[in-house]
Length: 204
Length: 204
Figure 1 (cartoon, each protein chain N blue to C red):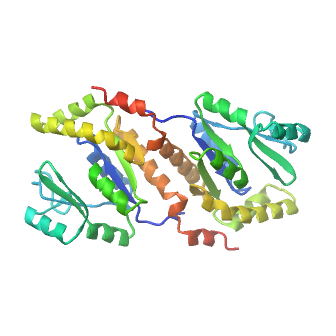
Figure 2 (figure 1 turned 180 degrees about the vertical axis):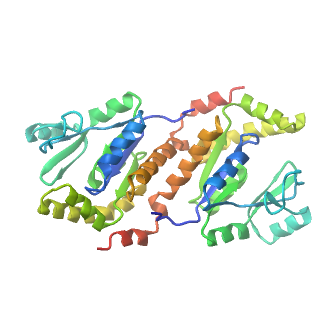
Figure 3 (figure 1 turned 180 degrees about the horizontal axis):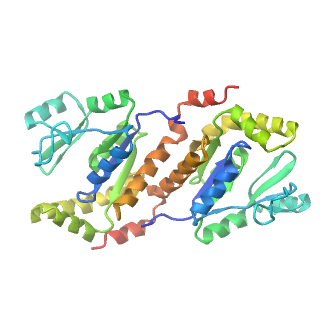
């Protein structure tokens, strides 16, 4: 019996290479009432990425227009590319009765928290920096990109204290289970209950 | 990898007949690092109950002595019997590295929350009052005891708003899963982390 109000915003942040994307994909497969909010970005699509699925790929001019029109809940510049979360994308998902999964960086997470104090902020950590470096090397990215990412990771990691939950991805199955528990538990919080549903239960 | 500080106090309250005892027993079997705090009581043991296992059964004189000596975190009189949670029992469990499960009423839960703001308060509800009455009838208790319990249940139910989580026991397996998720999720909260364990992870 579900008695909570849909529209919970779950924010997931993690240093690049932590396994966040895999974890989010697995979560979405398991939870049909959870939808990923698709971000807008000006960066070039990777070969396997699809517009409207992985991101909305837009050019810088259009992105800037959206900024001016106040169409983003949050946006940020990362490695020279822009990323933003569109208000319309979020509002449409809430209107359609979904909980929302947001994959954004620590800066964006702080903005979401300000606008939605009841959002749930989850930080995913790798089991060690060594392991993170290993995973980045497996992606065959340039040495200087890896160095940039490792340096950013160290900065970002200090931000975990700002989050509600910390999940360590030492095993995908275990981290996935942790995330599922966080989502299920948050849905059971008294502050999220539709109180008229409780009244229903106690009608004689 | 577990990085949280043990000693979390989980308080479970529920109207009598909600299935709380069964749920707590199942939880304890699954989670070896969770221990039930055994209460002191002046009520007569039921035939299947064992001293030191279900309760510490004490007479009224000894219970009153413990009150005077400030040995209880909380105590209450229910249907003419006294129930109390001994400080020593709790402290010993925390000292030995356990999380604690407390099965107490709404009055006791409020006292725990005052003393331990980081405790986790969970309220279990039956799927309906009708269902609760049915379950109480199955226990073969006296009609006037059932009426008393139903009347108390109605009063108690209004207290759910004071709790952190609400679990509806429409199915034991589902409610058990809800409780497990709450416990796992609480252990992942940033505020419960031993921060030096995070530092360990990020040593180069």
